[in-house]
Image (tube, rainbow, N blue to C red; front, side):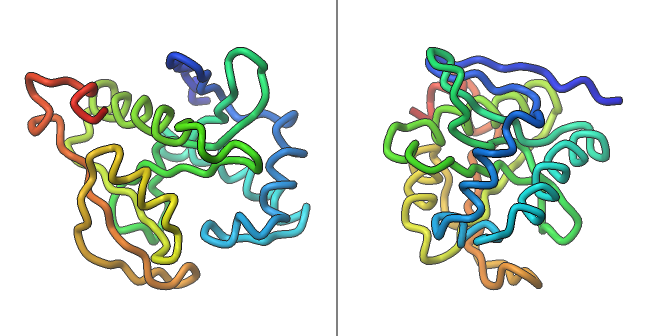
Length: 180
């Protein structure tokens, strides 16, 4: 069984997904905000999405963390490394739960996840896939220093923009803070 590490940032704790996250995740997937990431979805479908997050850790040895505000312990997102079958390359992905947009949490957690993939997993590149109408996700990718690198056609999600993150070599000398 893969041991899921815990990461911390100035305001956030990235931890293993758990059953207690389900009500918040189900609320997110039931909302229109989830339309760019497979929703809206029923509670049963949301349950399977939570199981998929945990299963990805077991199958790939990495995955997306449940992200909580450290000060409150409130789940605010699901963010991290993602590479399911059908994806063009390993990705850093982010979903913010309802009511947490506009605080910089997606960028903060995604940068921590990217640093982990480069420093711990040894990745040399990463992308983020963005649904073309999702302006907020595009802004996160830009804040992270990613640049548009083409399009990808997914069998369920349709046309997605590929945003390429700077490589560890591109960041040499500046570290991850070069993204800020």
